[in-house]
Length: 109
Image 1 (tube, rainbow, N blue to C red):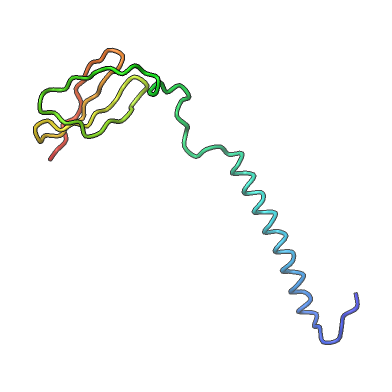
Image 2 (cartoon, rainbow, N blue to C red):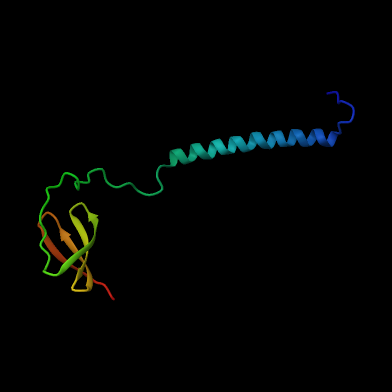
């Protein structure tokens, strides 16, 4: 290969080396993207049969003076209820199929 006047061998070597680094970086980036696409989700997905939307609405009776703060699904048939009963907070477990309240946790104040 013939060099033009004023072009040093070091500069030509540096340009070729940077070109090789660009190609290697692009191949590595594409490989990482393909690997992550095939790896699947990092967290396990919820089961496909979550019957919360189509479940019949049932009434839950809490003691008088009890206020529902939040509700979280534990299992398909079990909800955790965060309630405040006269200023004292606790977590109750509600089994939907039997419509029964199970004892839960008393939260420290």
